[in-house]
Image (cartoon, rainbow, N blue to C red; front, side, top):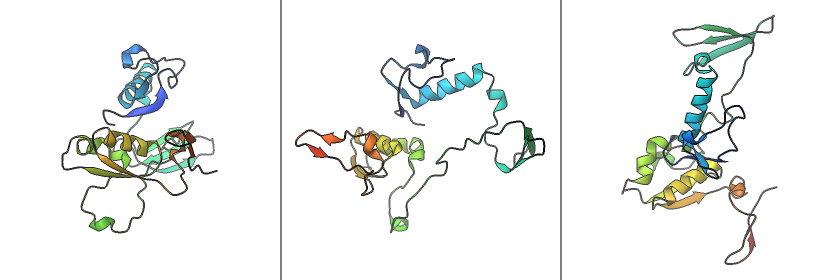
Length: 190
């Protein structure tokens, strides 16, 4: 989480029908929902529906098995509970819960910070205010790469945006054709 983080959803398009995102979250109509507003909204939703008491954060699940009665048994490594039994199991670790770093030749001798987009919050000052940082390279074409490029560029940094030759990733950010100064078709993979 960092101060300028935004979702790619506009106000009114991302909230639950039984809990509208009201003005108290600080998002006006036709604005993108900020990361902090989204966090506050989801926390308020969980609090209103009594979900916070049912959520255990920071617990590592070591083993999952289904019992003969079709319930689930989880063994954890936490100190306050070592076994949980539940009627339903939802695995919600995220598609990309482990940061992916490409193998780059010479990375061990590179004399500058290298970090994943998931760590932008802890490097926010370096990107936005550190006068020693003049140029930033961003590798990737997804939304988090777009966010990193935008953050760095809007804070006066020169940005080298490195995207694979196939063009996969950022196609949703750009229109299919550029109109000015000449009309050209952007590379889009099938």
